[in-house]
Length: 238
Image 1 (cartoon, rainbow, N blue to C red):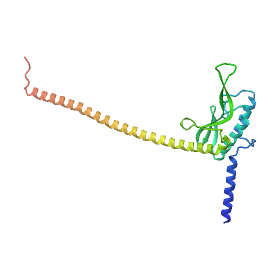
Image 2 (spheres, rainbow, N blue to C red; image 1 turned 90 degrees about the vertical axis):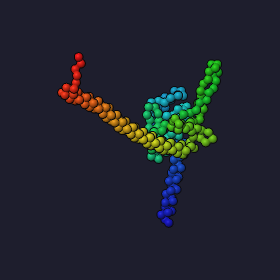
Image 3 (cartoon, helix red, strand yellow; image 1 turned 180 degrees about the vertical axis):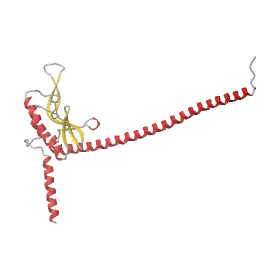
Image 4 (cartoon, helix red, strand yellow; image 1 turned 135 degrees about the vertical axis):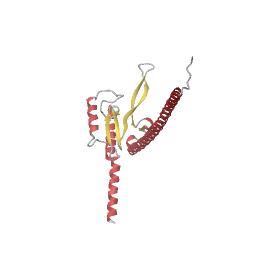
């Protein structure tokens, strides 16, 4: 009974710890090295306007200066949650990847923009930040965008991580299917090569047989000619 009680208490503690990891704090505490690095870049480029791309080898975050704190808090929590679950973050060629079950899935946080008319230039539009965040995960057919709405992005962390893990599992299964398909295709090609080799060998044997038959007929004719010549059966034309 005491063992059961202790096990239950331990499970409750773990549940509270897991729930705590899903809460985005109001202040950074022991930030991940990637967050420290991107904050240094931000400080270096404090006066630069809103950008539409990333600096080299930084986390994929594009937000207005005043929203950088929120962005760093959110990404720090997401990174720590992923690492707690045995995953990692990788930055390569200006892209950020969540490495989940050894599968690389792109992630990028940006602030949405809205189009407004330019009062000074007729017919021109400007795109200005809205303060609303979007986290884009994965790409191509499995791309998913998580947006601020009735539920803020910070409250969607569990779903985001669950989706990343599900996408990774699907990718692994797809890769296995591709591997099986390639093996089957290689097996099929090997059988076709074997059949062609058998056919080519049989064809060559048939051609050799024809040549031998012709040579044999020539030899028979020549031998019969010699015999007839010796017997005087051949009449020289006058």
